[in-house]
Length: 133
Image (tube, rainbow, N blue to C red; front, top):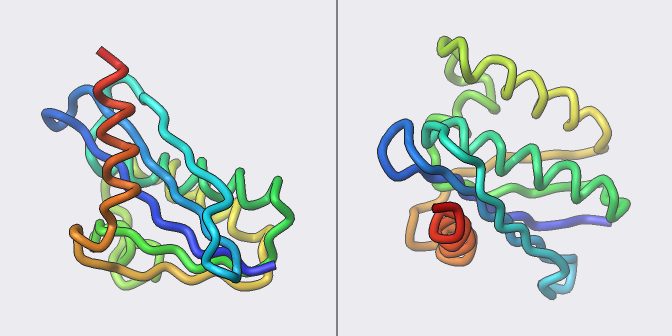
């Protein structure tokens, strides 16, 4: 099963109150899952990684084999695609968790999109931050 997943993480202040949003579509472009979770205090980049981790765990429970991710964080996409090294010590364990979770899937692709094309995941992340405090 192939899934298309949009993820977003954000923080108000950096670090500050943070949240994540995930939107999951099946092969027929039908919405099959959403995640909106408050994270406590984190940085924007930590929240982006935690959104991916939540999405990967959910995709595994759904029995997916192929994943297409869309994120509006160019830094995280370039790190995941091995174009940039992960130099931040707080991001390294999150990167490793994403890597280890990604081994459960046959195919996985991470693509960067413009923020305005990631509206639903962004809205879920903002709703989580609104609920958090």
